Length: 168
Length: 163
Figure (cartoon, rainbow over the protein chains, first blue to last red):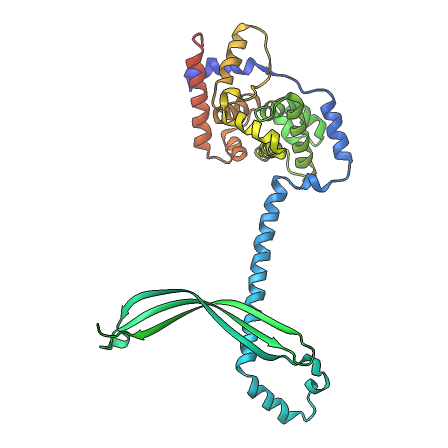
């Protein structure tokens, strides 16, 4: 670094041009004004916005997952639940509000990608099985026959199945 | 610059930092007026957030960020200025008060430096930042900052026979 000390001294002798005298006044005026939304859109605010987006994404995914799980639980136990309710309460709340009844109307399953993952021998079996991974999108739909309202939920799913391999 | 670090009055702090800040901003601005606009917006934002004035790395990072936003703000101007930024020979040179021919030659040699070396040189010489502060301001490592500084000095020395 000593090789450059003379050059550094020369550089330090160079004086940057002084900014215009009214720059301080302009800053003073800007600081006196209320903070505008434009002024918060810079580097620091952008960083905060970035975190907010991730938080929203996480909350949204969690809510969607909870909703799908709730729907599954309700679909899997409709008969049992109705029986219990009927046994305990002769006049269930459902009957007082018939508009709130939704009945399953449709279930569609679209397989949009299938991958053959090769032969497997599950459980030390001699029978070779072909493992197939399918990615699907399932759509469940309910309809209220009295009001005509419908509710539809769509979600992706993945299924792995073992198919007996046939001889060739 | 030590008193700048502890001064609570923004006018005192700013008056000492202003020439170097404007010089730093001029690397991306087409004119001194644009550079002053950048510095104004950066300093106001920095001060309003009540950041410690001793955090000079953040202050210069704010200037740099706003300067780059300034370039992109107008699409027509951005096209011209991004071309100017990519072509280092046409970048707006630092503005100095020149006393003699040797200083004129020195400024001409600075103009020839690649932009990444020139910004490190500007922060180190005329803003008196440490390599740690430069690294913080530019988002690079201290070693990279020090290397760019050495490369800049070597390039200047090569282009100045009398140095």
